[in-house]
Length: 549
Image 1: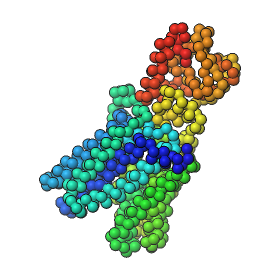
Image 2: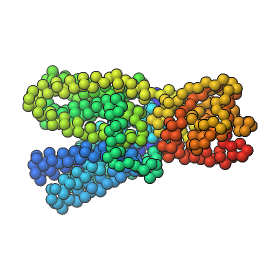
Image 3: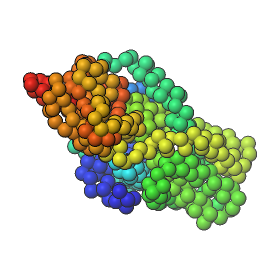
Image 4: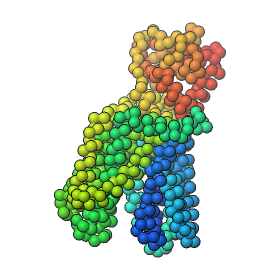
């Protein structure tokens, strides 16, 4: 599928469109009440209370995000997203009532903190559910790019719409309207139709304790150098982003000697760049090198800061902010897609929970460090320091390149597995992982692949040639390219129930028992399909017991 085709396919796909509508509603719910919250806080307690309110809007999410990721892995991810939306809508409505009746400041601030906590699960769940909504890698990257563009639009539209509503109404009305956008999001989330769901919680093994599950997510990152570098790049990028949120004010008012409106103009330029960045992702789709997007996106956060430090020009500042926006989309889409492709689905929510926590922490730390560096080195010196930070990320280029190889699976092997009914509903990363584990086996004509009564150790797919299935020496059927055999002995832990012999020189793709069982029993759709297949085969045990052995 070509690049343009992938983006068109995302927009044509009903489920993916619904996801984008949900993301828009959720992000508007996240940013739509910022202006009203700031105005309310300033009126109640001045600039100091504005800072407290801003801290409570972000910090609790950073603290609970790793634990939220565990919730994402325990339960259906679409339901987690809907629960996040609806619960935030309820709390925002309560905040609107609290403001309307002039409740104590502490009550409103407590509700803001609760909203932050409840929102912490949405993004990890969205990122984790995405692979179960697509069946091709190009679609996954394109869908992430569209989501990134929607996020960028909401980042600017939310405060703008909230500010407009504030002019014509009141703080409590803005809160209530923002709650309505979250109900909108939940409605579309509940209409999603994931291809499959992980077996978890009550459906699968009994979950471990919350802390143990969080530890598993941390270990999934710490024990995989490539994944650790991707998460580290995010921390570095958000550190710079937090600083830029401070720099943009000082650049506009002091360096450019411009009016206050230029703060918004520079922010808007970054938003335009984020939308342009979707085209950059198109190039990434063509090259297949997601690591290039991640590393290049990080560089595009640093170089513009060096440009602003070197050139006192409004045009240069605008261009620099556009480039930063492009870099934001490139690293966001590339990093998220890499994680979706290489992290086991069973811990994907926890990894994205950690990803979210590090992102929020990076923003907060960058915003704290920027004023200190400006005071110590001046604006230009601080810009140079943060502009050079991407060099640290480039040190992991070789490790990140290795992730590209892990994320790229030959289409032929993927198609062979996808065509098998029990694997058809596997999410893309799980399918690709299995495809990468397939072992080519060649069998000469007349030779047995295995014999009736042997121990079952592998599952097989016919890639070329033909095999015949024999039960007690009697021919049962012939299997050709794309057909599979060997699952009953693995699923029921019994000896082989038939002999399978090559009719002619035959090419097979073999999957070891452990990997096969993990894939089949770990997903609701595959488990049901496999169980149905085995029951149907065993129902015909006489005279030919289980024709796929």
